[in-house]
Length: 75
Image 1 (cartoon, rainbow, N blue to C red):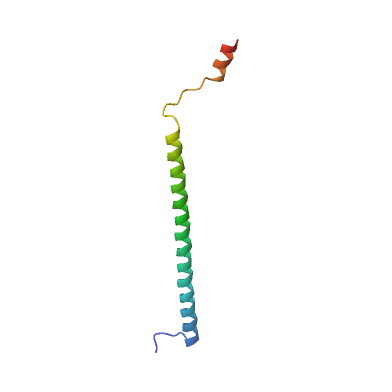
Image 2: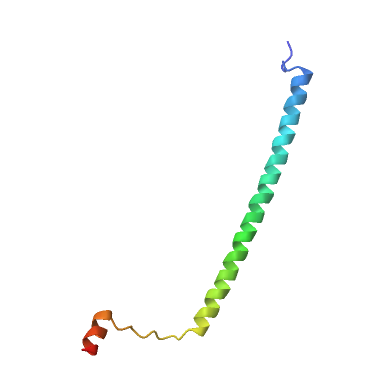
């Protein structure tokens, strides 16, 4: 009795399905890598903007007067 009871047509279909899954997996991996590349590029852009803003802003931040303190000084 043969170990493989699949017909030649079933084997061909199974091979075609396997090939299609491999191609889908490769496509999914390329899309994932492209997305990761976009995310990393955006992170680098935002980091550069944040560092630029930190270099331009004063190091000491003066506390703002509260609105109630402003009202008392006006009277």
